[in-house]
Amino acid sequence: MFPPEEDTTNSLPIWTAFGDLMACLLGVFVLFFVWIISFDVSMAHDLADERAKRQVATKRLTQLETALAGPLRAGLITFTEGRIGIRGSVLFALNSADLRGEGQRLLREMAPPLAAYLASKSESLMVSGFTDDLKMRGAMRSYQDNWELSMQRALTVVRGLREAGVPQEALFAAGFGENHPVAPNDTEDNRAKNRRVEMAPVPRPVPLKLTTLGDAP
Image 1: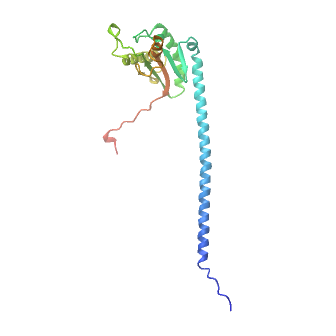
Image 2 (image 1 turned 90 degrees about the horizontal axis):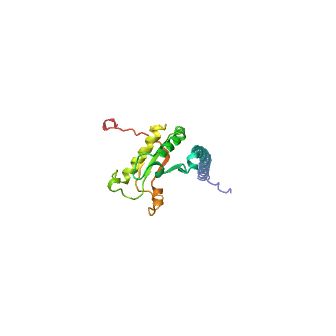
């Protein structure tokens, strides 16, 4: 007697399905591997571009610092991480927003390198005014408060830079009053440090497109 033949009708589909499953898994693995490689390459390109942009920005700031070497050596300004600081006493008398002669000369000297820097990139120059914490009293009270005085001083510097050749569309003013001191307001020397004007390049604002109810879809 011959042994009974094995029934293979049920086993073949199982191996076929298993093979299809393995092929699918292999395909998914290959796709995932290709995605990882592409992601790594894209990240490497992005990092290289960002590094190049930072190098260019650093070079431009170095050039600006070099162009302002005169006022820096004279101690009229400070230059830290692209931020320019000017003591208030260089620009203004106490509780005044009228430029002194020394302040006018300083702004005329600073305007050309600032204009060249801003022209090479779509940035604006933010001019910020700061005061100490002493309140204005009596005859010295030309302004309502330190906030108004700091704003007026920033505006005066902006106008001085505009008159010296910096495009007005690249300038704007901000007043912070006695807020954000750089030293405690506990001595006259520290208060003099807090009475200051700072300039810093910032991204130029992009105009918003205003819509009305009639424009809505």
